[in-house]
Image 1 (spheres, rainbow, N blue to C red):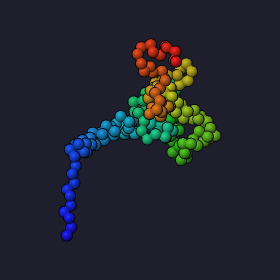
Image 2: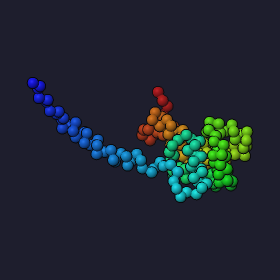
Image 3: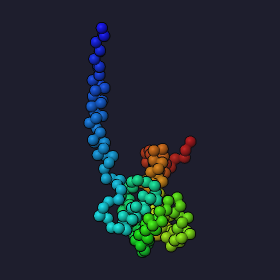
Image 4: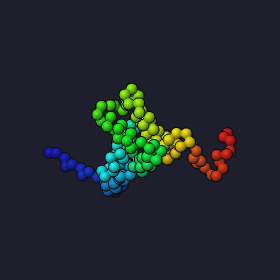
Length: 173
C-alpha cells in the first residue's frame, strides 16, 4: 500500500513573487524591444540606409541609436560635399567584393584609396562622438559615444562631478 502524496505547498510570498514576475514579462519585452535602438528602417533614402548599414557593419553592433545616426549623417552631409556618393560607392564595393570588416581598410588602401578615409570617419563619429577634423570638428555625442557605452557598466565618462558643487576643485587626499 503506497502512502498518499503530500500536496505541494507554496507560500504566499513565493506565489506573489512568481505572479509579479510573470506579469512583468510583457512590460519588459515592450521596454527592451522598443524602437529606441532599431535596425535600418524602410522608407529612408538609399544613402541614409547605406550609411546605417555601413555603421552596423563597421562597428560590429546589431543595433545603433537612430537619433545619433541621424545627427552623424546630417553633419557628415554638411561637412563632406561628396558624402552621399562615397557612402553609396563604399556600400556597393563591400557588397560586390564580400569583404570582411577586419580586411576592409587594407583592401580600400590598396584598391580604392578615394574611399579609404570614409570608414575611419564613420568609426570616429560612432566611437568618439566627433565628426570632422581640426577646426571643422563637431562633437555630437560624449556620454553615448560607443567608447563610453562599451565601458558604461564599470566606468563613468570623465568630467562628471558626483558630489556637491565645488568638490572637483579640492585636491584628493
